[in-house]
Image 1: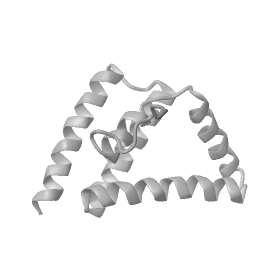
Image 2: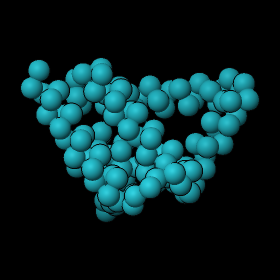
Image 3: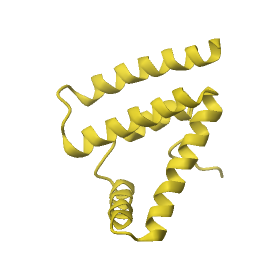
Length: 117
């Protein structure tokens, strides 16, 4: 009997929306693993640094395949990084849901821009 997978893949709104949505989530086991690997990487642990770089490269490749524009793919990566930073360090001045909704709207504009080229 098939079982449901979580998270669903491919994501319903594409990799870029999934990347942004999951970038705003902190505190879970996966997040703690990423933070631990990042800290190891900062302490000159080559394998941890390579793993984190590999994750970043894989996400960039997925985003680039979706939008087809290097600048837009990089902008999406930076938006996700900002969401994660704000969630992890509680620096956001407005609610997370509002911020995410606004960024998804901007993402849709960026994606339309990429396809219009």
